[in-house]
Length: 292
Length: 328
Image (cartoon, rainbow over all chains, first blue to last red; front, side):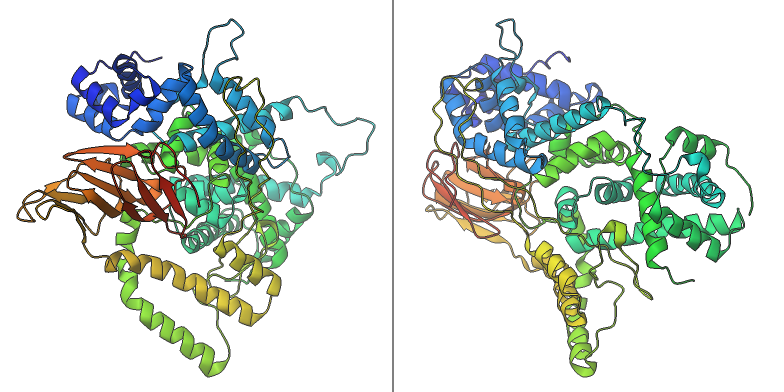
């Protein structure tokens, strides 16, 4: 936890008035503390000059920060407002994030933690203390919902029962995989990882949003501030660049023919096997130079 | 260059998906607020670049960002100003491109694939590249939504009243997504041509829009006091009838599109990403708005009452200075 940045009380009072924080019963002192805590997180220690801190504070969602301060302190009027304005947003967002039908439960559990009943010791420890006004409250809530959903899914995966050993495997064990495909996978995976790593961060993020996160073009566009058609074009361009790079390496460095590459890729459709990341990284470090 | 086939394309996509799902971060994961602020374009360029670098390599944070994207209210994509500036060269081509497309369509009855014309393809796992041109990737999935009518768990909110929440509508599919669905299901060349035309024109219109935006004058009842909104979204204020102007300090990245001044000391300003401000004298106060959408108009009656219009035509009203907004 960073100690709050000390602020001039005049500035705090001005921002307090701008935020209309007094309507929720938030004192200037309390708001000053919240502003200082926000600046401690948002302004790097190396750049904490008065001008930079003031610029940062001016960019905050002050109304939302005041509301969060009041809710964290258990102010009745603030909570009434929060429930009225944000509960529908929260539930709709939770339903969109959790498509398994548990969205309502996800939203309600977040409400519980926002209210601060989760400590068990009687002391309030509202989740609102993690909101510093850098984004709007509505988007922060959606981010927290999403984070919790991701954590739940990951935890569920960790505790998922192992498959029944008596059940037939859905695919033959790797030892029985056709030797050609096994070799092809061993060749192409490190090349693919290298080609992806060579892309610009935004290209990687766009590709991951599409392939790994299954977002639609419109959703990716909203996230990256790009038009849907731009997303489409850029995805196609990056994918083509990766494929060209990988195929060139397979041809030039490993001597594979066009037919062998096409057949190797076609064999993946039936079963791509499981990806051993450590194995891929090892091959990147010590590239195998075998030829066909 | 050989012609790619359906099967090997699918195989390549499968491997690419696997590779991308294994993203391993090289720095500590981001907190929710950082990702939220990034998604609202509310960070400095340096901060945004740092976060984008992490997101590119962290499957966990990507999933969080994906949740933000999935749960965002449907609305048009608003390009950041820097992107719109970059697209200025497109504007003179708009008329020529449209004329060429119409000529091709009417003259030959055929519509050849274009380098920049999106073509509806199957989802990632089953798509095939089009021969002779840059393949375009499309996918459409409706956003999930469920009615929001049950009361909040009382443990979470013991004292507050629980007014009925507005019911969520059916699954909402944006216009571009409908275009994708239509193109994919129709499967005929004419349907694809119409889709391609629409998709081609959309970014051109969007790119052209800011270039035609003039300085917007926001007059107040006092002839000597007024505001003006620059084409790039900055705001100036005058107290000398326009003889001199002072820049209104806005948070970085804010782009204002419209204003309304009910008195000489109060001016409501609205803009992109749900930005709502009230300029009171030389000061500026940011108000919260329930959605991060593009706001196109505002009509204010006082420092506390105003009606704000979103780019999709909805009107939100406040009578308490932005504390609460009544949706349409």
